[in-house]
Every structure is written in C-alpha cells, then in structure tokens.
Length: 402
Ligand code: SF4
Ligand code: SF4
Image (cartoon, rainbow, N blue to C red; front, top):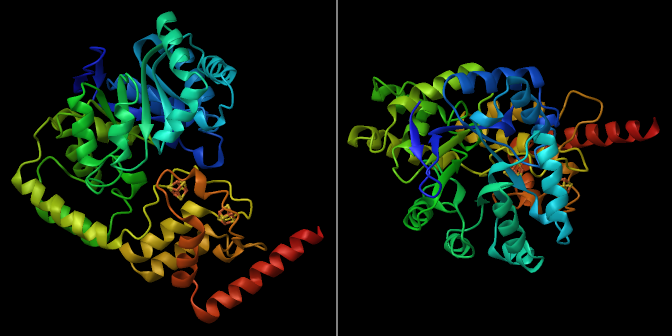
C-alpha cells in the first residue's frame, strides 16, 4: 500500500481509504453486515487504514463499529465520521449526536471528525452561533476528537471562505477528472494544501459514473490507449487523483473484496506525477466525451431519498444520463426499472408534486423537480407518457383501496 503523510498530524494514512457509505444494501438503509465484514477485512489485509462513515448513512456506523470490534481492529485504523450539523438546534445536540456516534462505533474517540456536507459558509456560521468552536476545542483537549475537518459540496468561491473560517486540520472535497472546475475543484485543492491541510478526496468515480457508467466512446478511448498499467476506467480515474501530490488520501466506496484488490493495485503504482503526457491526452479526450453526456450531475448519494411520492430520484437521473451515454433505448429500459413500471403502482417522475423535500438535501445543488421533468420528457415522450401516467394513477388508486 502506498501511504501519504497527513501534514497536520503526521499520521501515515493509506492513499486509499474505505468509503463505507456504499456497502451493499446502503440504498435501502440496511447495510449487508456479511458483505461489509468481507470488504473491511480485505481492505485491512491489503493495508487500508482509513475508514469513513457518517451519522446520516443509515445503519452504517453500527455496522462499521461491530465489524471493527469483531476483528479487534479499532486501534489499527483511523476512523472518520461526521456531524449532522443541520440537525443541531442547540448546543447540547453536539454532545447528543457525538455520544451516540461513539456508542454506535464502539469507540471512545474519533480520529477524523467532519462537519458533514457543508454547502455554504452560512451553515458553519449557524453552528458557530450555537457554540461549536468551544465544543470542538473541548473535544480535542479531551482526546475524543483527534483531527477536525469538514466535507464540502459548495461553490468554488465559498471554499476558501470555509478554509479560513476555522483552524481546520483537514478537508474533504469532491474531486475527479470530470470535476476539475466544479465545487472546490483544482483551485480548492491547491488552496487547502497551501494552508497546510490534509486534503481527502470523495467521489473519485462520481458514484460510478466514471466507472461502469462511463459513455461507450470514453471506454474506447481508454482501451485504445493500451496502457500497460491502467487497465480499466476505474484505474484511470483513481490514478488521475493520486497523481496530485496535494492529495493525502482518496476514499473509494468499494462494494466487494475484488474492488478492494483492484484499487489497491492502482494505489501501489499511482504516485504523484504518474500521469504522463500520453495519459493526460487520453484523459482530455474522455473529459470532452463525458461532459457531452453529463446532463444531470447526480452521484447517486441518496441524500434526497426517500421521496414521499416514492420516486427513485437517483435511479431516474442515472437512466436519463445513460440515455445520452449509452443510447436512448438503454435509458428507457433503466427508467422503466427505476420507476417500477411493471408493478401495480409505478412511481413515475410525473408523480412529483414539487414539494421540494428532496432539493434541500442535494449536495450537487440539483433542481430535482425541474430535472425530473426533463427525464419524463426524454424517456416517456408523447403517447407513451400518457399511457404510463394512466397506469400509475390506476395503480395508486388501487393501492388506496386496500
Ligand atoms: S419535489 Fe418531487 S421528487 Fe422531490 S421529494 Fe417532492 S415529490 Fe419527491
Ligand atoms: S439528486 Fe442529489 S441528493 Fe439525490 S442522489 Fe443525486 S446527487 Fe444525491
């Protein structure tokens, strides 16, 4: 395993961290414990020493805590979790959430604690007014929190404001070859590193959109490059991130032990500066192809779910993007599956009542109801849409009769 030094703490952190959010079963809020155990075990065997979870990943902290306990591995890893700041209404809430997290994770301290999903400095100012700065100082003095940071999904302009808003130890940003100028972006990575912070990366594969969901043409570019070391789109995407010396660690949401093996192999060869001119030419071509098909920047994080009208929001956006990346018919097939079209109560995008419950949770700032209309227009045009809408109404009426 390649290890990199956290410039603030001096910790030797594995270049590859395990993002626990995407364990099998996470989409229904019940992580599959046996799968999680296999993935965590393999990751630890292969030298991964950083695990990332969050209060808001349903059932996730409990599973991570139980598996680490069972393996007797708590002290051999850096454990990261996150504060659900939007749910903190008074100062006591900081302790309430944190104590619960320690219980769930079966530990007495958190190595890397993050303010979760900051999209604007005003969110930080709100919790400052509740006294979070003093609370953090107390936790650090007592050793319950070792390193403090924030995960960020806001604008490039707001990122330096957040960097300077507190004496952070680290930050976590969305970064990959398709997001050089999106959210914190390359400029943000450089700014954080200049300030001496450890920079941790999330979404290196954009929720799989730079892996198996990559446009067919982009697959071909990587194949034609014939690289001796980078064999798959995943290898290319991870190596691109690790080629930046400013990056301390990259989180990958590995969903099977084989994915751990694949990513560790790349981690061992992707050193700073590993992307030579030939590789960067291939990346530049893929960036163009991806950009043309990237109609909705959904990463499938599920933060917007559940929708009270039962709409599978990430599934609909995945189908919509697939219709540009892999052809219209593929998108329609995926949309039919995502909206349970063959059941008695399909959940079509036309079910949306524009309540807005989803949009405020989206870290990508997507206007979800508006973009769902785009999905409907493209994937259920004209008479097809009318027939499906009638089926959905009938299904919902039948359901109400039971
Ligand atoms: S706005 Fe539409 S998609 Fe979003 S939660 Fe409300 S009904 Fe569901
Ligand atoms: S629409 Fe936004 S919140 Fe919902 S899954 Fe996609 S990126 Fe996540």
